[in-house]
Image (cartoon, rainbow, N blue to C red; front, side, top):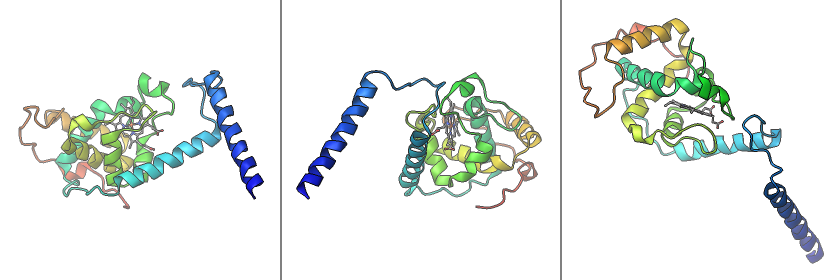
Length: 199
Ligand code: HEC
């Protein structure tokens, strides 16, 4: 029993030292042009999903996220800060987004994989060791508005997105809480926002 334990310990040590030597020797390729090994990708994806779920568990979703004027504020924020990496309906990813590894996912699909609280947590804290920045300095109100927009995003066609963008510009665009831009937003026809099935 003791001998078995000792050999197990030695085996683990050999693996750890071996891995350390491989990394120290510079064999591991950190290039963004070289994808992860499938096993590394599986582990990282599992860690990301479990971590986001655990960390977002205590977050309460504020009421009123369906308010069309909130969705417009979120769209404005998305167009200014997110589309460059993630793209948008009818808007391809920009240079920065195209060169990143791991690649920024298409949020018209990926956003519906997360709950609203999880989306908020991702936006506020970002994702370590990827190009996904933390947006905590943008304030919770603006981040919740962006979550409200992400909730609608999977149902938006190119035309919907373009129309909403024009409506957001007509509202003065770029709303930042505390930025002196406090005109009450004119009412938005909710018909601009297609109902989102599910969740
Ligand atoms: C500089 C590029 C960049 C910008 C700007 C950026 N992101 Fe990301 N984002 C990424 C990358 C890269 C990932 C993938 C992270 C990963 O693979 O774990 C990501 C992941 C995400 C995810 C999780 C998706 C998933 O499938 O796990 C969400 C949600 C998200 N971003 C939303 C946003 C929003 C909203 C904004 C704007 C406020 C934004 N991102 C701005 C690069 C960016």
